[in-house]
Each structure stands twice: as C-alpha cells, then as structure tokens.
Length: 240
Image (cartoon, rainbow, N blue to C red; front, side, top):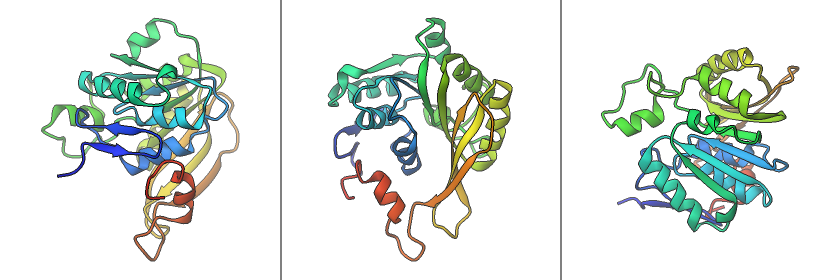
C-alpha cells in the first residue's frame, strides 16, 4: 500500500484526506515560482498545502495564506501547516475564494495556483476528485480566477499558474481581460523529445515580450531525472 504521506526534506505532506495527491508538476511550480522577494503570498486551491509549504521553505520571511474550498482538504492542509517548521507564518482559509476576497485582505505580492483544468475528459465518479481536477460550473472558472487575482495583487504583484498548454492559452485570454499579461513561461516536457506537458506562466500588470524557457522532467535516454529537475527539486526531494 502506498504511503498516506509524501516526505520532503524539511516537511511532510499528509494527504489521505485530499482527493488530489502530491504530483510532480505541482512540485515544479512550487520550486520555480519567483516567491523569494514576496512579503505576502496566496495559494489558491491549496489542496494538501504543498505550494504554500514550498513557498515557506524558499522564503523565510513571507507571510503565506492559502484558500481551499473542500472541507477535508482544508483540514488536511491546516494540519500540514501546523506540523511544519513555519506554522507561525501560514494561514489556511477554509471556503471559497470569494469569501476571502470579501474580507478585503491586504494585497498579495505573489499568488500561486494549480487550477482544475480537465474540461472534456471523462469525469471521475469521485466528486471531490472531480472538483479538484475538472473545470466545471461549480468550480472557479478561469475568468473568475483571473479577476480575483487582479483584484488581490499589488501593483507589482505576480500570479503564477500551472496548466496544460491548450488551457493556458485560454487562461491567458481571460487574464488579459482582467489586466494581467504573461511575463515568463516555462514549457515543461516529460522528456526533451516529448510534446509539451504543462506551461508554468507568471503574469503581471505590464505587458511586453515573454521570456520563454523549456525544460524536461527526465533525461532523454533514461528514467533518471534531468539535471535541471535535480537542481530545482534538490532542496525538497529526499532522493535528490
């Protein structure tokens, strides 16, 4: 039986109560997003609390808040926060993003999000897993996410989002309508020769040329992690 937790070098993710478990591409987002200089960070759709915890490890001064709609996942994330070395800097809001926004919080310097994105795939019979993985009428739409982010960011703030390439193109259109434009884009491949797997894109209020890079999770000729992945995830993964 697989472990009910994922052990990192400085913290543990208990995930038995979460529909969506720790996944590699989310770990890349947590390791890559430019959170080092942010004073206030928000993780939208926290799930296990992974992104917030990775941000807390990378930025020893930031105050980090996370919002999660699913009650069981919110409870799990809160417990993971409390068991971490950074419990005093982490806050979990259980409920909808709209409820948090209605409290008129101080603006955030960086917002992280790995939103639901499966739109046409077969929906899971597990309602909670569907909510976590599939965009649906009862989940936060791309347009809503973009508008909330625009409202909650500082003027120089950044929104970093993880999505498959087709969904990212759609999100970029919604973000532009909300006044947020791509600044950097990582094209993530399984291997260098495989088709793009995910885009990790950082958005800000100023438009301009987009800095694009491409990297792969695995070396082209083996099942070993790529040198780039080992460098990025080395501070987190026990095996690296």
